[in-house]
Length: 376
Image (cartoon, rainbow, N blue to C red; front, top):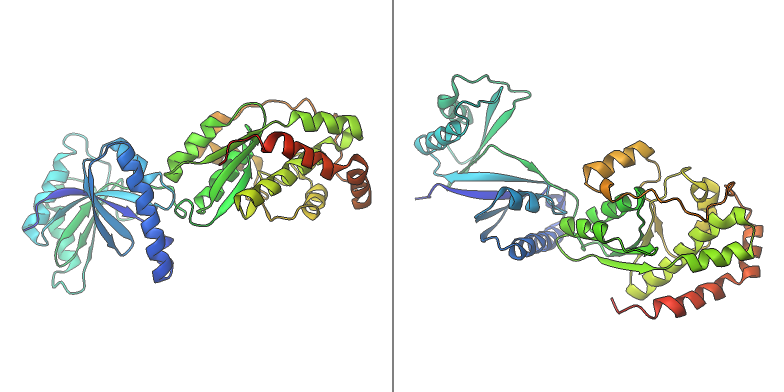
C-alpha cells in the first residue's frame, strides 16, 4: 500500500526537450544545485528520481524552502503533491482533506482536472466527478479558476496537487560555459547578468569602481545555487589619464573601450567565452549604433547585449520583478562630459588609440592592478 504522504514535484520545461544525453546531464546538474541549497539550509529530504519532466522529492519543506527550490535556474515550477492509491476511495479521502483546508475561506471558483495512464480502465471524467463530491457548494470555473486541483493517475500511484509555485526557468547555472559581465550599480547590467545566468552561463561579475557589488553577487547566488565570482577593479586612474590626453567629448567612448578591452583580457585568463554588457541602444552616448559598431570592431571577443532592444521601462519593470531594483544607485559619473560624442570616425579613433598609446596604458594597468588580485 502507499501511505498518503506529502511530496514535491520539481518541474522542468526546456530541459525535457533536449536529447537523451543532454537532458540527463542537465537534470543531474539541476538536482545538484537544488540539493546543495537544501543541504546548506539543513532541510531533510529524499530524492525519488525523475519521471518525464519532473523530479519527485519528499521531505520536511517549509514555505521558504519551497520558494528556494523554485527560484533555481532550470526549475519551471514546483508543486507540493499528495501521493495516494489509484482508486476512488483514496482519491476522495484526499479531496476531503483539501476541502477542509478552506473551511470558511473558500476560493471564488475551482476546477478539477484529471490525467491518467492509458493502461487504466478508469475514465478521467469519472475521476473528476468523484473528486468533486466535497466541493458541490463551490462555483465551478473551467477557464479561469482561482483554485486548480490537478489529479495525475498512474497504475502504481495517484498524485494530487492544488498549488503551483512559479520557478526561475531557464537552464541550470554553469552548464553553458563562462562569461564576463561588466556589472555596475545601475539598473541595466544586473539584469543582463541575470539573463545570461538564467541561460545557464557561469557569470563572473567584473565591476570597475570603489565598492564591490556584494548584494548583486548574493542575489545571483540565490538563483544559481552556487557561488558567483566577483572581481572589483579601480577605474578612476584610467579615466583621469584619458581626460588628460584627449578631447573630453570622447571620454565615454574610451571609458567603454577600456572596460571591454580589460574584460576581454580577463576572459582569456579565466577561459570565458564572451563579455556581457547592459547596453541599451541609444540610451547614452557610448550606446549609439555608431559607437557600438566602433567598439565592436576593436574587440577580439564576442560581446553579448541581452537588453539591446528593450525599452527602459521594460528593463526597470523586469529589475523589480526579479528583486534587483533595490541595488540601483543613481550615482552620476563626474567624468561624463556636458556634450559627449555620439559618433566618432574610425580613422580618428585609430589615430587617437595610437597617439595616447592605448595598448601600453592597458598593459600597465594590468601589471599594476590585475596581477595583485588573489587567484580566482
